[in-house]
Length: 161
Image (cartoon, rainbow, N blue to C red; front, side, top):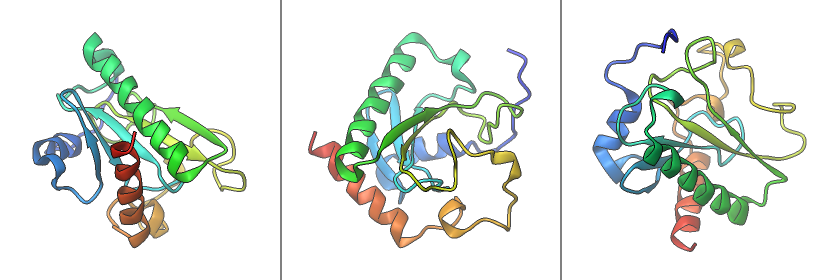
């Protein structure tokens, strides 16, 4: 694989996996995957599923991890649908810098969609969002009460499935 990859040391998702259930945004974990609320909320309830093992892209997943990621995406998608009643559900995943990948660890976005959001159709154009110009709900470094409430709601939704 020859994708130009972002550099991040330590890897954000490896650190989340290493700390287990301690993070503010933890929702779910199984033997191969972890699910967290995305700290950059383009839509309320937007989540990320990633393998516990460090792999850079989709092409680096083994078959068991690929299947586990989709099972976890289905679990959180069902929890999102029960908890938030969105009008649609969007899954997206970026590979390499040019593909919009910001963390050098495979991750799949699971996004509830509602009419009237400022996304339009599909995922946002991440390249146009500049640091320092993000509203709090879009800034992964800012933990808001709304983000914490989404974590509690979605984690409860998984527990109740």
